Structures are given as C-alpha cells and as structure tokens.
Length: 115
Length: 110
Image 1 (cartoon, chains in turn purple, green):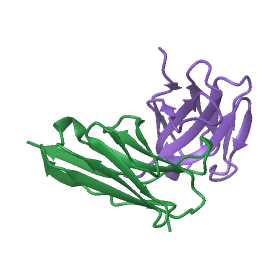
Image 2 (cartoon, rainbow over the protein chains, first blue to last red; image 1 turned 180 degrees about the horizontal axis):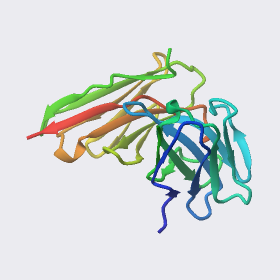
Image 3 (cartoon, each protein chain N blue to C red; image 1 turned 90 degrees about the horizontal axis):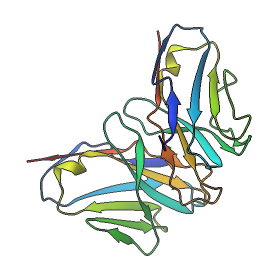
C-alpha cells in the first residue's frame, strides 16, 4: 500500500522484556516521527528523523528507548526492559520534507501491552 | 502547565448544530498551528491548518489569536460523521516537532 505501515499491530509482552516496533514510511518521505499515545491523551512526541539522523530525540522518556533509521527509510523503535507504564499505542508518521505543511501521515500504530 | 490545552469534552450535539472548540498554547514562539481529527481507534489525520487571518474549509472555520495564544475550530451544520476527537496541534515553525493537545471529543447525535 501507499501509506505508512507499522508492525506488529499488536504486541503483548512481559515486564522486563525487549521489544522492537517497525515503521515503513511512505516512499520518498524524508522525515519520520515516532509518537506514543495513551488512552484519553493526545499523541506524545518521542523522536524525529530527517534522513538517517535523529534531528530531535528530546521526547524519548529515558535511555530504555532508542530508535534507528539506518538507510533513511524504515525505522525501528527499540524498548529495553519494558515496564507496565510503557503500554500505549506507538504511532509512526512521515512527511515529505523538512519544511513541511504540518501534514504528518500516520500509520495505524502498534499497540503495546506490557503485563 | 501543558504546552497545548484543550477541554476533553465530550461535546454532545444534535445534527445540524454549530459547535466550537478552543485550545490554548503556552509557547509564544510557536509559528504553525493545525487541527487534526482522530476517529476512535484510528490514526490522526490533518483536518486543516490555522492561519492568523482565519481560514475556512466548507463547514469548518479555524481562527488564531496570537496575542491570547488561543486557537479555535468552529463546525457548522454538524453531521453524524463529524463525531471524532479533534486534536489541536502546535509547532515551532517547521514540521519537526508537532505538539498535540489531549483532544476534544465530539459526539453528534440524531
């Protein structure tokens, strides 16, 4: 499809485990974003990539969270030693360029549940 | 204080009604403003940008008051299909870090 693709759509894990969430942005989009959304809240910014580099990672809550985008396309969000408070929907979005119109194209999200 | 504040609602209105949502933001350096729409268990989608002069898109009108750091969205002639959460979004001027409010839930009923 032409949209942002995220896998897995659902992930249930146990406290303390390691998790990887994958995002495949729209082809040609240079900017990629990770947000997370808890129930009843708006999306919370985590990190933004322009190409391969993390242009702004100020939203990552702590050093258990890490994200990469090695070839400037697919990105992986990695969470170590998961905690129950990490449970949320992790949303990936892409946009065509740095000075965009503010239109982010979101994927359907990866719902993470930490038991 | 949150960077972007919205009344979470829900706003329950009958079809055909006019409804207005407000949003305030704390960063006076913010340059770009948007309204996104999010349907239940779906991803957010851009509804419209908000310009200083105000702008209209069909039944939707957005206004920005920079002096008061206040953004509004007006929906006229509400439809059942307008039922969703409306997210107020603020940016420093590039697409680099959009900050979302908690959203205002709208339920349009028959």
